[in-house]
Length: 166
Image (tube, rainbow, N blue to C red):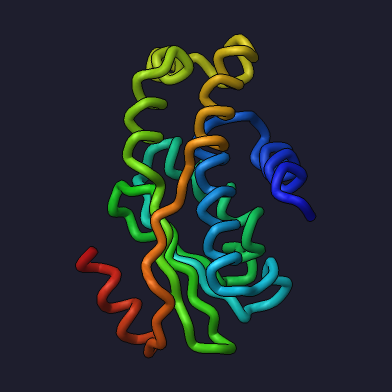
């Protein structure tokens, strides 16, 4: 599937259009690209999302799940409540991992957007003007340049232990 199709299907899966789901899709696709693997149909991949417990963090998690195929149902993704928008993707078959972060400028700019102002007032995304939502979605999709750590060989126990320190 091409990236724009993945994005549209992820937003359908998530249930509404929002910048955090888009950020999750972008980091998920970047991790797959860097690892040189396809979306997971099984348990070759394992994801760790570092998110907060707020709504935006959950949206980010949905984007990651759709893009990578790592799901809570398969047990190959977990959350660390560090309040970031970060994904560590582990390839169990080749014993490599990569950490992908959402650019700070994307987070900062979307937090200052009209869309977020409405969300902070408790207005559901479905009740916000589509053009306001699309501005945040488009900005995130076009500016989510990824920050990727180098591919590293690892021991899974070290990654899970060390991820608590990040």
